[in-house]
Picture (cartoon, rainbow, N blue to C red):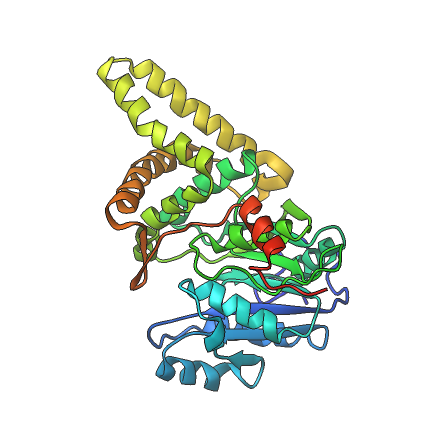
Length: 349
């Protein structure tokens, strides 16, 4: 059995292999919605027991939580996030709670729109033999226009150091024996924060661009709601933020100079970079050729959103996240290492 969506996903080699791990899914929904696909996926994950423990940490309001509990509790551990671990970032709150409850050393963390198959789970868990945190590669299927737009971002990231997916795997002890208890729940770019926390504890961080995991696309409305917030993430990576902020002035200068050829050359250069990412590590099987053409569109969108994010930082001190304003995108690895040495980050051996 490869999974509830057929065997066309990546990593099917080794399917059926045994592993021992916890699958951790943090979720929060504001209203009851029918999601037969998620129901089926959770039931399928539960069928992989006893090798796979499944924990759903649900931060939904009580009436939504109760509805989810009736649907899922027969198959998986369905729990509420621990109040003592509450942070401004709801996903981090769920992950930190799940790490407290997880029975296994190896933990796969995934958003509710991620759809692993058995091959991708097996390989992802196996890669924890070589690292303490592993980032696989998401791809959208199906591919509506807004997911195609966002695939331009994915392809550029694949060229320039690796994409940030909605799933990763964590080994809870570093080579030095330190235990990863959790991470800062008050930052925006929580995947980066978790990876940096592992690195600060001496763990190894592995990017696996050839391990493909399907992700369901968001709605167009949700896609638009994420534009500025995702741009704000780059305050955690100042060189990237500065590069993105530089795009709009550069485009304006070219337009004022009436040099459309330079603008076209720049767009073609972005397409070429995206195409390198598309072809990297067998990616052409999962990303269509026209996705590379969308990369300049994404660059222009990010250029505009970066300036809006900067305005939010100056005007409001941070970016809106739910009903709060978050100031910090993520801590630097150096700061996390210093906090760990000072005892500000709890750990045990």
